[in-house]
Length: 509
Ligand SMILES: NC(=O)c1ncn([C@@H]2O[C@H](COP(=O)(O)O)[C@@H](O)[C@H]2O)c1NC=O
Image (tube, rainbow, N blue to C red; front, side):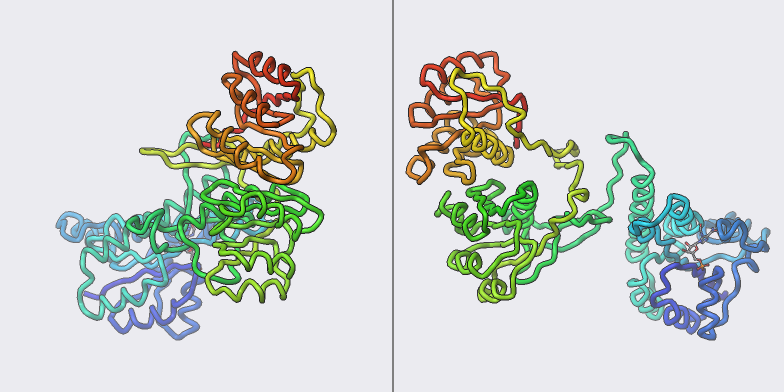
């Protein structure tokens, strides 16, 4: 019996060759309007779908293939005598191969000028119905959604065996494809912030050599509709990004994009190890570097101005994993690219509106989702709770410290001037240890005499204030909110130093 293939595709890549080969293999081809036209133009004989359904396409193409003559032809179980008898009685010819790809909904909504009405017209109904039917009945029907599979399908047909494993893979691909397609539509129409079902669509961006460690397999998936603020930016030079690189680069980008003045962020294992702000990038680099000349080794650098030759020469002296910048001057690029491995990434800094509103993290058995912490504290958020009042310079430094500390893993304590980190204590399970680390690191640095200390969360007792004051810190900022806040205030007053609260916690666990 002649085999029948139904072809109805929006993406016509490879269609003509595929159809010719199917015809050579003895398939009768059935097609919808546009697909038929392309095939006929290539002098391929095709039966119009309306000949099979007995109905012309109607409602501007909203109904073309939605008919029992199509769907029964796909869905009948080939090994079920009753099904096959019913087809015979209804004079329905079985369809053995379904080649469908869908209206380009994603490409449509990616265009900024697309209206809702235009987007809705690009929701494919007939295509997914045929694909899902064929995929459900993969035991008897070959479902093909991806033009890159045409070659494999032809090879299998020519070999005379399209085995169950291959059919199952094709079917799984169909259901992944239609699920992702529907998820995009759902997200396009959804206005709720935390909907009952979370339907996210990601596409494999990159197979990774390994995960956090070399014995862990890994891959990187990117939002189906990536934003200009995606962690995946243009890589200009260097080795392929690793799993850890992507995480660190993401943390560095999230941080640098919050700074307006020329700024250098040195990131290490998801924590900043040095941040400098200055009138020029080259001086900002010096400040970030001097913050911690040891930890920056092997670090990820993010800057918010074009890298110039002067800054590049200094960077080039160190081993750095990644440098992220809005651009690199030709001279800077030539200097940095001398090292074949360093990854140079060009990131967009101009589209703040494209920064993610929400972030998710996987936990065993689920996902946690929250709004991104976009709050940057300023002196307007400060309440001075000590007797001693801050100077203007101290206020600026307290604001800078607060800005840094929200990007440091809790318990986070930083010691800074108004433009430079001097000591960062990160990720300790108690606040006093983070305080000791930050203060100890800072004490030997130039500028310490004017340094302030910032804390991401309240002080549960007065020990951190006592330690800082004893070691020469003259102003401290913290959210406040502990039942023992008064102890910390009393301690600040005892030492005659400034204590400021913000009322806003910035945990980063
Ligand atoms: N309405 C239908 O019955 C229907 N049947 C198939 N399609 C889609 O029409 C497209 C192909 O149309 P054409 O061959 O006219 O270019 C394919 O993307 C296919 O998924 C349909 N379109 C939308 O639902």
